[in-house]
Image: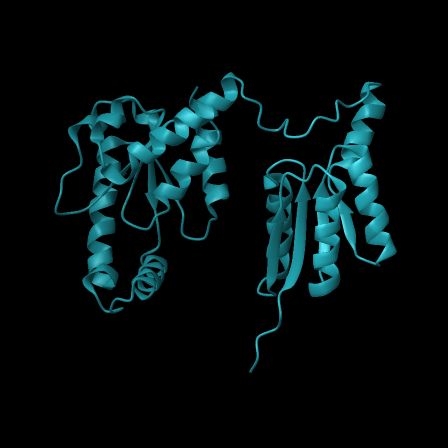
Length: 271
């Protein structure tokens, strides 16, 4: 049975295109497993770049989603999309217009303003570098410096959570819990409100680990994905978390964004 051809969505931006791509990915999830291919066209600053996108859509098909703040470029794209009957979506235009009407102010029409090089930006970069340096127990000295410490067995989304929270300017260290290795003593000395335990259903973890083994080209019956081994690890992790007395979130059926939202709410509450 042949696989259906993916629908192409061209994301056109006068900056990097992250905003448009994020919106399209969120929308595409509502149609999973229908295949959607995102083609990003960043740093579009002239009419030639728009022509290239339009020509690509005429050849390969698809729709265009754009976040253009320069009126001349936006109008040119809309005009050509209408000319060739190409579906288009202006993500920023209606919002900018509505805000302008409410604020009684003209927009600045300056591309790339979502990532200004201000103090907030550098804090985010610092937090991301911190998450990479202190990921998965590489260096336990980060525990004392972290805003948040994540605890959990392997494949409980510690790393993606660390990176997601880093984009919220939080310095996150994550510590793997393995029965054969006692966790660093520092986790018993930092305030427990900083520590987040991650729990997962053993059957769910078994499926995740088997998929991980397949991805690596390894046998699915390896100890790593053995149900009894998984239960042993989870029991060990529960004992550590109970000893600390930290808050624990179940990640079994939650997306990274959902778990991160719970963590952020917890931090706000304890502060």
